[in-house]
Length: 133
Image (cartoon, rainbow, N blue to C red; front, side, top):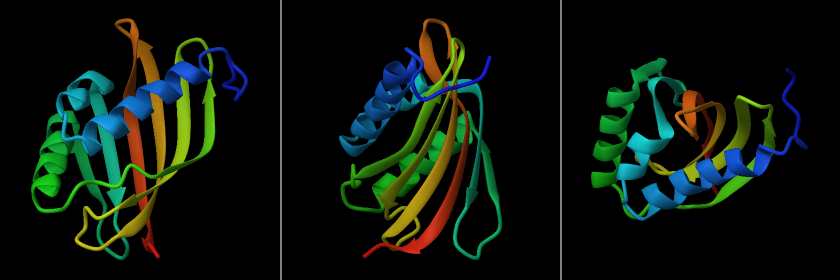
């Protein structure tokens, strides 16, 4: 089934990501275990650097380390696309983030799956667009 931005599951998919953003911004990192699927894969392409790939445990560890070294995360987000069908969702979003040591705009393509009664991130592709103003 094709995903569409007007599917009834769109608000629930967006709410799952909003909960993740708010949780991380408030250092409530238990949200990571809830929203990240056990088989999650992340692909991070920081500007000019090699591709960094992680599984769920590796990416959670990466986030914990990054948060320890930076001030409170910026909860700013610009949603470009939120779409869903009965079992899958997708969000294209931009975020300001200082995880690399400099404030950057990151663009993320995030795939969700509805499993165990909740929306979970199964794949996240993160690309840096350069320094934020």
